[in-house]
Structure formats: structure tokens, C-alpha cells
Amino acid sequence: MRARWLVAAPVVLASLVDTPRADACSCAPPRPTMVGITMKGTNVPRNARVRAVVAHEDVVALRVHGGARVDTKVRRTAIGDVDLVELEPSSLLAARTTYEVFVPRPPGEAPQAIVFGAFTTGDRTDDQAPTLGAVKDVRVIQDTNAHGGMCTTRALHVSLAAATSDAGSSPDEVLVGIWTDKDGKLSTDRLPDAFGAGTITLGRSSLCDWAAFSFPKNGGPFTFVVAAFDVAGNKSAPRKVTVTLPAQRSTP
Image (cartoon, rainbow, N blue to C red):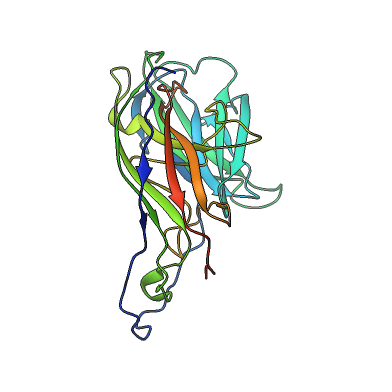
């Protein structure tokens, strides 16, 4: 592994004044959202992979605007109350062509498809891996005084900040992922357990945060890896991070 850091982060127990609940929390249901490609983005690489966050029951597909459906390999993983889905086209996308990302509807229902994303390819492909910069501000947070007002939660979560660079991609095409241990392996060969740009959170940081993660209940050292990845599936070298978790408390 080329770049490898070990970061020990202190437990941060946020302390808020336990005042009567002033604002109830009202959360909208999750909506299909394309990630890693700007809506109506242009010059998207022809070897792009389409990623979206959707409800567990939603099927996601890709088609040419006004044309045929694209054959893709589908990967998906649950991240709390939603799924992260990745569509990898079986061949290069056509150059200078507009594509739509959609949820098909059952026969007889109108509309027949819910289009929630669109982008236009350029002439290029992207085979250059991004670079992961400094991983900093690693924090373990459990707000034991949260009472639901302003959508606060007592759920344990880990947050960090990371910068990226990628000469082969535009900034909005590069994300940072967190991968945790699965079956005794820390590997970035699967979809991440959390992802984002700038600040990344593993676990539920708000009652309206649909992404969640089940941490070990007994606390103690917890290790994961962080890597940058771009729209074409290229990844940086992973970086190992270790934090110390508290024993879990009740989490409304």
C-alpha cells in the first residue's frame, strides 16, 4: 500500500444544554439522487459509472435520451435506510450523447419512468486515479443530550475531512469513500459504506440522515480505510484510519 496513515482520534462527546424541545423534526422521504456527476453535466467521460442513492425497493437504469436502455452491470449496497447503486455500462458510452438515469415504473402506471439524472458525454475517457490528500479533523461523535429538536440525534457517528486532486476528472467527479471491515477484510473492491466530498460522515448525524451504520456496541478501537474515487471507478491508494469508539448508548 503506497500511502498509509494511522490516525488516532479522541472521542468527542458533544455537550448541549438540555432545554425543552422547541422545534420538532420533520424529514422528507428519500428521493432518488445521482451522485458523482453534476446534474446535466457535460464532458462526462465515456467510461463513466453512474451512481445513485435510492430507496431499497427502487430499480435504477440508464438510457439514451429519447432512445434505448443501456446494458449495465449493477452493484448495490445498503447504507442505512437507502441503497447506493452503481451502474457500470458493458461498453463505452457514445461520445457527445445525452443519457438519462431513471427509475422504471410498473406497466400501466404513468409516467413510465421517473428521470432523476441526466448528463452528456464528451470524447474523452478517464483512466487516471485520483489522489487523496490529507485526512484530518477525524472525530467520533455521540451527542448524549440530543432530544430530537432541530433533528439532532444521539446516534454514534464518525466524521472526517479529506481533500482530493485528479488531473483526469473535474472536481465534482471525485468523491471520498469510507470502507469498513467486511468478512475480516478492509478492501475498496466493493462499494463504500459512506462517501461524500469535503466532509464525510460514517453513521447517522441527523434524524433526517437516511445513511446509517451499525458500529460495534462494545466500543474500543475501530479501523477503516479512506480512499478517493472518481466517476470512472479509478481509486487512490487507501489510507488506514483507527479511532476509539465509546460503548453505545440508546439512539433515538
